[in-house]
Image: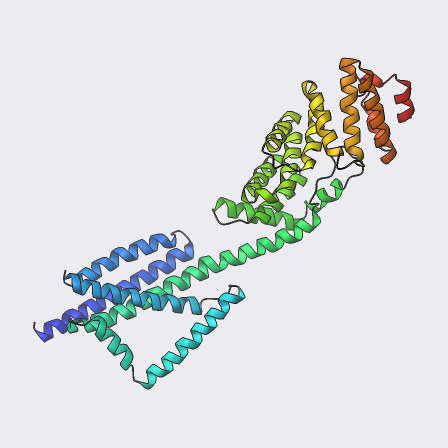
Length: 400
C-alpha cells in the first residue's frame, strides 16, 4: 500500500475521531445539563457512532476491528477512572480511601512513564496493533478519543446526576430524622382525653415539614430511590396534618419495604382508614393483618375499638379487647372499650352478665382515669353505647 496514501487515510480517520469526540462532548454536556436526555440514550448514540468509526478504520477486517474496539474500551475505562477521581467527592469514607489509593498509583505510574519517555505506552499500543502496524496511529487516536469520552461521560454524569442525587438523598434522610423526633412513634389513644395529638399536629405544620414533603414526593414521582424512614416520616407527617388519603398511601409504601418493622405504621394506617373511610374499613384492614398472624397485641385493641360500630360483631369486639387486656390490664382506654361492648351486648340480650361486665370494666377505667366519666355520660343517648344503662342506679353513681 502506498505509504503516503496510508498516512493520509490515518490522518483523515484521526481527524474524524476528533470530530466525533467534539460533537459527542457538546451533545453529552448539553443534554445532561438540561436533563432532557438520560445517560443511557447518550451511551446508545455513542455505541452507534463508534461502530461506524471502527468499521471504517478497520476496513471491514474482523481482526483489525476487534483490535480497535479493544483499544477503545481500554481508553474508555482509563478515562472513566479519571472521571471518577476528579469529580466531586460525595462518597462515604471507604470509597474516598479507594480514590486516594488510585490517585497515588496513577501519580506513581505517570512519573515512572515520564522517566521512560513514554516507552511503555508506545509498546502497549504496538502490542494492540500487532500484525497491523500501519494502524498504530489510529490506535493512538482512539485511545485518546475514548479516554476523553470516558472521562467526560463519567465526570458529567456524576456531577450532574449522581452527586446531586446523593446530596439530595442525604438531605432528605437528615430531615426525616429531625422531623421523626418531633412526631410520636406510637399513636395517641383515639378515645383518651388529653392525648399528645395536639403537639404532633403542631409539629407537622412547620415550614421544614413542608419542604420535606415536597422533596420526598418529587423523588417518588421521578422514580428516584426513597428510604423506609423517609416514606414513614412522610406518611406520619401527612397523618398529623389530617391529609389521610395521601398518608395511607405513603404509610403502606413504607410498610411494604420493611414489613417486620412496620407495626406502628400499620396501626396508624388503621386509624387513618377509620377516620377517613369509617370503622368498617379500619376493621377490615385489621382483620387481614391479624389473620396473617403478624400483628402485635395492640392491633387487637384497635380492632376491638372499631368493631363497636358493628352490632353483628360485638362479641368479637369484646374478645379482641380482652385479649389485649391480658397483657395490658391497666390500659383505661381498653377497659372503657370493653365496657362499651358489654353495655351494647346487654342492650341486645338483657343478660345480667353483660351488665355486670359493663359496670365492672367501666369502674376500673374510671378509677384509672376519671376523665372517662364525661365520655360515658355522652354515650347515653339513643345511639350511645351506654343507652341501656342510662337509668341504672349503679351506672349513674359511677359517672356522677
